[in-house]
Image (cartoon, rainbow, N blue to C red; front, side, top):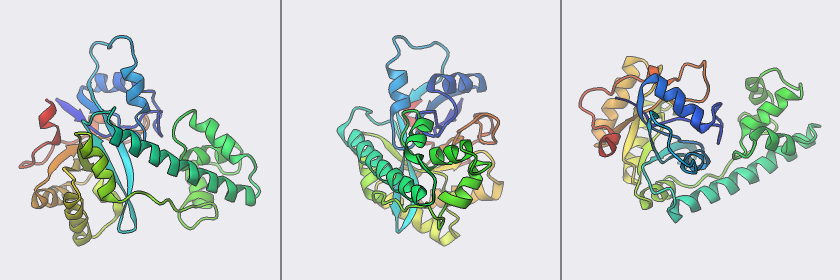
Length: 276
């Protein structure tokens, strides 16, 4: 069975609506999945509110992706299989959304100073009810003709060190994993190689994640070179943690689609063993 435990819907920065994503995954052979939208459960809530389940779709676990601070560096922690109504999760989401809103207002103020008018309202329209983030400002900058691509928007305005960049004060690693574990879920360190850490620093990060209540590391992702996946697998085994797999899907036509998720390397216990 194909498992995809890292995906994004239009509830955050994904292209597809929740039901459309499930239908796409079903066609790809996915049997177990989770929406891991950034700091929101809106996608899960939309499916849970449906009058009747649609037959043939993958089993959907509650999931989320929290942004957290680890020694001054932003990392992402995926939560899986928790009680979506638990006050710890809902409170964590509320605090994250408040942080996102405050940063969006600071970004808009900086863009206003640079002569870009109406950025906050335009970003809100781009978000269409999803939690405000820099991608929504990037889309507005493209739509307004100031840049040609979202990548250019980050290069000129929104990326680190650029004139509209604003530092986010994310919660600490232990706090965010605490929200997940209090609600009965599993905490997973997402895409560990995305942090561009040396082997020793990555080993230290994984060890700290474990010590803060982490359960698993995302080992199997599309596009990883065999040597890179072997490294993450080795560090996961050394830390005594479970392994997860996911596409980190955002949009059709990209490289990170469910069909490209590789199998877990040998000797790793899958984090989804309790749910299948």
